[in-house]
Length: 461
Image (cartoon, rainbow, N blue to C red; front, side, top):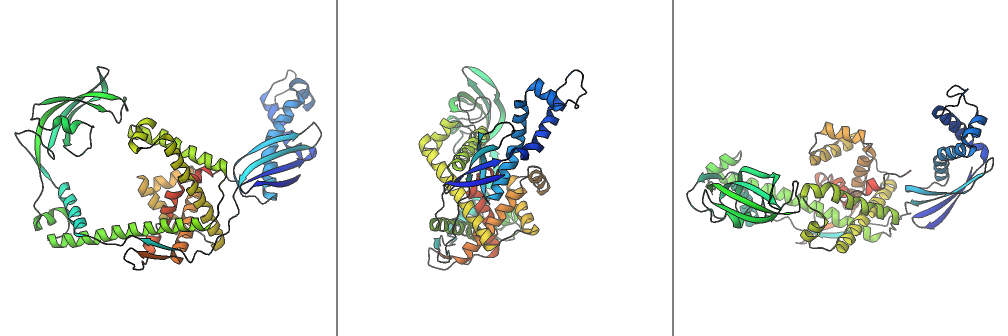
């Protein structure tokens, strides 16, 4: 077999392959054997039909077609390896010349990873938000805790903002009650926005025993996206009472004995959260700065596939859970379809570029992933997916996704290398020291940036 590589552009090549007929013989033999098992010919045992009889009965052309279909992937892979190509996705193969007992010639066009030169990134400098916990932050944190421990008590008055009402609901579309449109004894806090649009206005001012009707777009269920006429009956009105801010509350809501100790712990917790946010912000800004330094061409087909994958996942996985369609989603986002498509394309392009440059950095720095690092990353991914580590690990192995997780960790280590060499200062001008615990999260930063890009590129040879 002979092959030659023609570069069409920085991300696409054409392979020209010539295969002598004798090298097709193993595939030709396999084709006869396969056909032998599939057909019956009177006078011959199954699997024992001579090749000449198969040619006469079914045509030599059918055998040659079967042989070529079997042989092409093998010869294509050999040509890729011979050309030392890092291919992406599936090739477009065209048989240019073939006759029985003669040489097979074909071409294969395929996307390839572009050659990337990693520049000196030691001069990267970024500015991040300073870690500052204000009195307002502390009060909001304590207030959220108070809300969690609020109690309710029945009142004989009209419902007002902040009250809890117990309601029965009945939804109709086109004057017909929906099978899944009836609910009894639902507790709802007025003003929380956690039920149906329009319900706050409908129940405010009603006492127990009062009713109202309002129109609302259903967010889920059998009539998701449709406007429904909703009847609401208020069966009880309850006032919410927040606990007093004192030492008793501290003992009720935490392991601390005094309110002062609870406040001090809130400060520490908020500082940890803000430091985490600061580290994530530093990683994202350093990554953006690195991408600005490198010229990275993006394969058109890979980009197109990535955009389609992201939109497909949104439409078929996220929309049903949110009770949305394209029209309601775009209305909620305040964007046109064209604006959203452009945004997705830009995100996809950044994800692909991020993967390319960090993979190149992994190779340049000779970074590897050990079992402990992979296990730690798997545990974090399992926690974020809501699965147990064992369930997540089993799903990863069965889905052949282990290399993807290894890639995430390796890219995280590559980004950590860049962050370590960068100068990070906060908005107060103070230099920020990102400790090891924060740098461990770089794999998650990379995974969030690349998104489905790894899956779109998962057909790499």
